[in-house]
Length: 305
Image 1: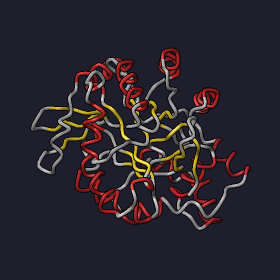
Image 2: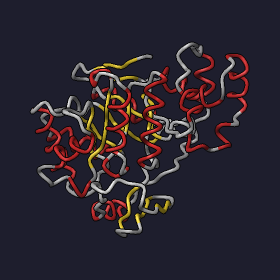
Image 3: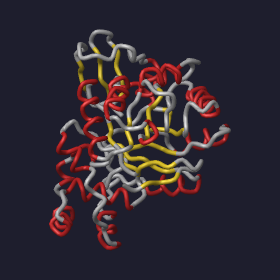
Image 4: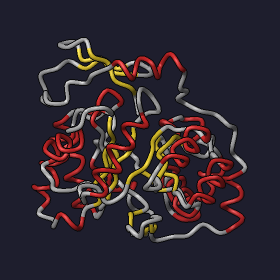
């Protein structure tokens, strides 16, 4: 395992397990499998509706809480709720969160950030950060914050490398964390000839080559899967190193191609959505669209990442 040190001295693993789009049952199984395989970073969110399952998996793992780096995200409709962090802690069945993020730049995200700063000062959160923010929105947070954000979680993969953003974040002492690190399973990306060539050289899959590239490029990654074999394989990336020429070959794939695009209309919807976070069971039928899920029992929608 490799680690990064955040701007407040907190150490974070360079790879973790993501639980986006996983039902509570699948999330619990995936996290438990990942922790057994050596993962120590777990990512979830209020809106993923599986925080309780993540908490159960952590307890079942038998690991000391201090061995696990737990991160979650506040949803916009909770930014102005005074007890939002405490309720999140209760769902996760833990005394503290290692990294808490503002999930979307929607609604009163300034109030949400202030809520996180308060929790940080009270020791309920070890580090705070942002998710899906652009440069201007990050600058707004930096202009008013008392506690600097440590991480930006956003879309990053070989087809969308966010190099300008990474340079800006570096100047601010922030790390980038990649969701969709494998390009949302895009066959075109996974079948790029460079990955086949490097995979043959290092006896690794295209996914493993891409994840190794991320880590060497300084991107913290949180690939998600409910397949135990894929979970194990995704973590088998610490026994080889790409050379500078190989890193450059992958860097040359950048196409500025995104799989998720935020719009003002979408952000407005996010601010209005109230996910039923206290109802986290397998009885709700889940509908998945290109930008959100709907739980038919409550007609509640939630965003993708």
